[in-house]
Image (cartoon, rainbow, N blue to C red; front, side, top):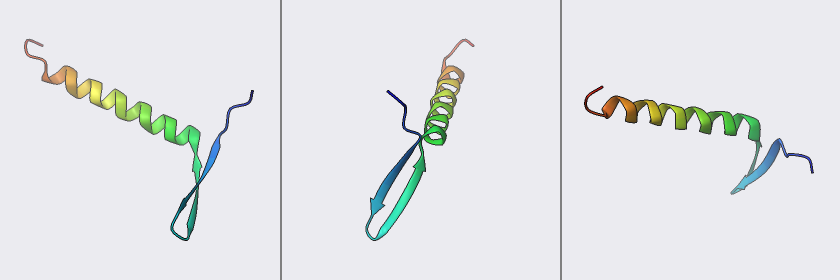
Length: 45
């Protein structure tokens, strides 16, 4: 089975083509940033 790299979204009268690789990369970066902030908030470090 092949992995999809693009997805179409419809909002109102507009269509958007999403690059799923880019979306995954941004989600991973957000997760990494949240983890770094959480580690900074821990006392004793």
